[in-house]
Length: 206
Ligand SMILES: [Zn+2]
Image (tube, rainbow, N blue to C red; front, side):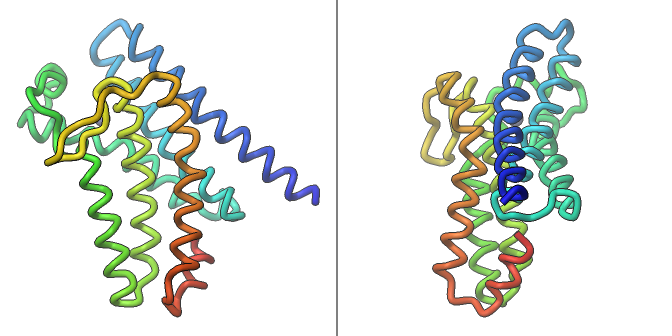
């Protein structure tokens, strides 16, 4: 009973931390003195929010955070890594080139993680390889947390169909905090729907 309450409290703290870190990151982005400081602040915020999002998913799945440190670290790194596409498209490591692109770079297209997630889950069930499905959720959660945060400035981009309007600020904060709860619910629902004999393994990993 006490353990359950402790987990609930931790989940509340972690969910709140997503909102608080996003807000602080946005303030840093707005008031940072130099372009480099703003970019670093923004990128570190993406990483922390991505890590926290996966931590909430683990907590909801009743998995100890310390024993799942590697998956939290993957989410942290991937959420930050997404912005590398600015430099790839600019063909330059200069921040001024990377931040002045004419088009949004490819990792910022939300269709990409959704397609990847579908493909990995398809191959996971086809080859009975639950690890692929496990990684698909880490990828989806990292990308979506990043895209929702960027979405408050530029909307969500579903190439080749187009982009949504920028997400209103408080809706974006709410979506960021809701994201791990929705994903974990989807994850559990998909496991119950699936007929894979290795479901137990995946549930155990998640
Ligand atoms: Zn970005």
